[in-house]
Image 1 (cartoon, rainbow, N blue to C red):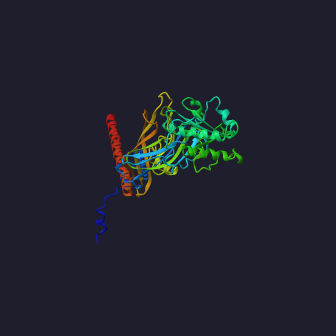
Image 2 (spheres, rainbow, N blue to C red):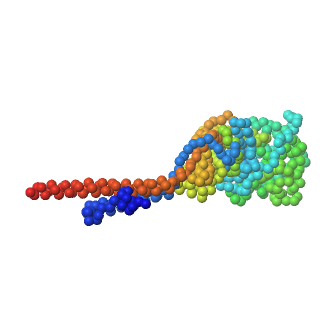
Image 3 (tube, one colour):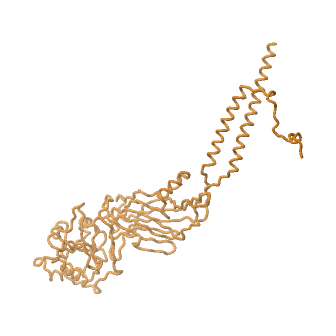
Length: 477
């Protein structure tokens, strides 16, 4: 066994007898400063240990949500009728989905973006509207031309007034014209307006009566509207409340529809004004000229487009009169991030989420200074961001995007187009792992370093004072 004397010989910390040490005022001051410095640096190190630090890297997208991306949107179009508003999706792989309705809802709004009623339902429309097979060029015009001067007079004079709003250049109007005039002649013979007075078939040329057509929110040609006496104008906002006819346009179908309308009169035309007993061929017409389109679509993660436009398989549109001005109430990509989750993440990643919905609340208005045929385009680049905790838990998964918007003149029908470009890379933000042993090592370094530096300073100060005293004593002798 080692003796106590031999064990003492390996002591690194040999003690100096207290009687051989000397306390000084400068040493006391440095000791206090050293203690304060140790406490301050320890506090800083402790705060740094508990603080969250992250590292950012860019890797190939390894999304867990598969090959499809969800797009949530809410757009307001003050000058696009819900009657024709269509949401379409296409991409470079050949996908081309037109007039998506399953996940899209439409609500009529006025020019101030205020809602004017319940959800607008497009209903089921036949794939092809039937017209007369043989075009009779020698038909006799049987419908009554109406102008803005006497339109209201005739609508209020007859219990039922059916009006064909048309444009002479429209190909669909040209196909409808013979059957419409023949149907009007047949109904005039059966129900003479002067003797019977129950129904009147009329027509309005929208190229001549633009204000009248705009007043009734006519955006596609031809538009057949059914007006019933006493039920056209509602008390709130003065919106028009009548029906649109979407059925076949051959003479036989038109006459049959008119007969059905006349047959409803004895039971009270006003109570049946907006009832649909014609298998979807008649539905309430849009009460205003604007539309709010909201919902979501799923697109492939390849370059593509989301398009909102006026679309119909049986109507024509005047491109010079189409106004695709809109307000983006909401546009986001991927799974919805809860506000609570976003707040929690922003505590330690303040810049996250800034571009998650950067177009929200933005307005894109065509002031007509650019004239007609104006398409509003948005070029959007989407990048995925994931935040991973130190334990490997996925804290948040979101898509951020940049957007550049422009207007362009188009030879086709104006649209609101969102060009989508999804990045094949993703941003991965990982919480850094903190080592407790590293923390202890730093604490020891702080204590030892401060103690050593203080000792050096104390030695220099003590020797300096001592030397100065010797010089002063030498001068006195």
